[in-house]
Length: 88
Image (cartoon, one colour):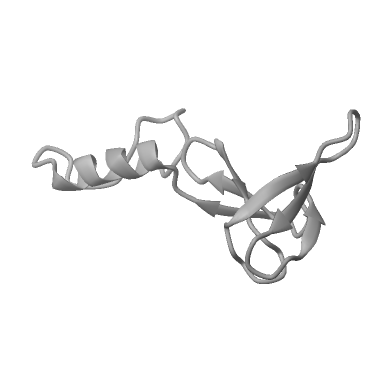
């Protein structure tokens, strides 16, 4: 399952579609084919993107959200239109 930032759409890695762990490592990459990953928790082997896409927030967007939340000017998570993320 591919992990992607909900605001900037940056790919943040893979998540195990079986147990949900984000402790996964690429174990095989064949040219022209989808990379294969292995879960460190349950040992499940899966292809990149298997199970769909799940969204979260990358570290830089999380820092920006916290800064905006504590800002006395905006006080909200609203972002500049066109940068991804919620718009008003």
